[in-house]
Image 1 (tube, rainbow, N blue to C red):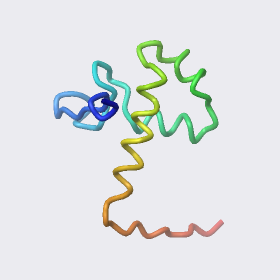
Image 2 (cartoon, rainbow, N blue to C red; image 1 turned 90 degrees about the horizontal axis):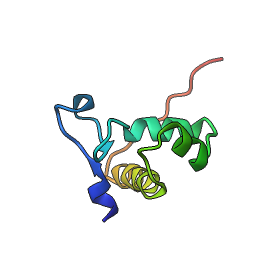
Image 3 (cartoon, rainbow, N blue to C red; image 1 turned 90 degrees about the vertical axis):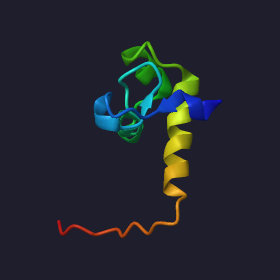
Length: 78
């Protein structure tokens, strides 16, 4: 069921994965969580979302990274 919460349509946000029925991208949710925002803060800023939708975004991202692809990490000089 959670997978159906994340959709991709070329006509919406250039095809980026979004929460169904919204223009809120998985990328935005991940960025907000990485910046330290809580589920509650995200829900307050985007009342069209649910806790289940945020969890679905996390599950989608984890599944995407589980693919057999190597992501080299390049260190940037300070």
